Image (tube, rainbow, N blue to C red; front, side):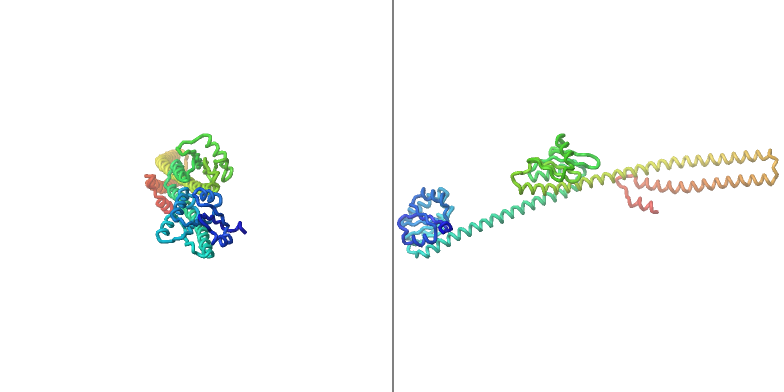
Length: 389
């Protein structure tokens, strides 16, 4: 049972016989002689729950406590002074030196034990409270840290929207990873190029090759203090992972990986924007070319119509001259002239219809050309409305 008792070191200056039996029954008692050296030595070895000093020499006891305090030992454990006098000045001095209690020697042994127990339990409660406070502080600090990391990631997501190219995007990612205290190398594989970046903006051939070869090797590839993280079209090499701190190691992986997810989304958005811009440029060039071709077709069509009309006129005149030598009747000659007239009329109708079609198509091409005259101010809705009309 002695091992389960609370340990009390008793500094005996005179005689503790009146309280010896009660103290022995309640505590594991270790009695020493009054000296600062022995007190500090015993405290180091015994780690008591309470130090009880019995003395009639108030000033001498206060000097003993002061010497022990100078070593930094006595303040670690509760001190109780058992004295003949407990006037106000002595209580104030005892309190100033860090004593937990100043007890008059005429106290009943059972009451002394009870007051000692109360001080021991108070120490235990304070220790537990301190532990709870430490845990609460740790949890609060962790929450603050997580909030800071979350804010850092959110800020990256917001800032990445403003990035218009891969260089800006990569530098913005490095700003975010520096918040975590890590050094990184980055590879971005967009639809149009592969961008390799170090924190100084320049690529390293060995790292670039490594990242490309490991891009399909899974989400994480760990080797020593280095870790390659892959997501979509993005690979990141973290060069100084905290292998000696598993909690921070896992936190870094989770938080940095979320940055890679945001980076991958923005890279794909930039690819889509560039693809749309290229499509827009191609359509503008196509319409411009069609406008030029339509102008050429208009000129060619008029020339063909003129040549066709001249040819029909020449054919009619030739047949008219030939009729005189064919010996045809008047009725046959009228029949031939009527056919010639019908052919010329139909030829004119065909060209007139062609001119109308060409004019309508030409007007639409011209309007589209006017709408895309300034590529930066193209209104797609107006073009769509023109096509519907």
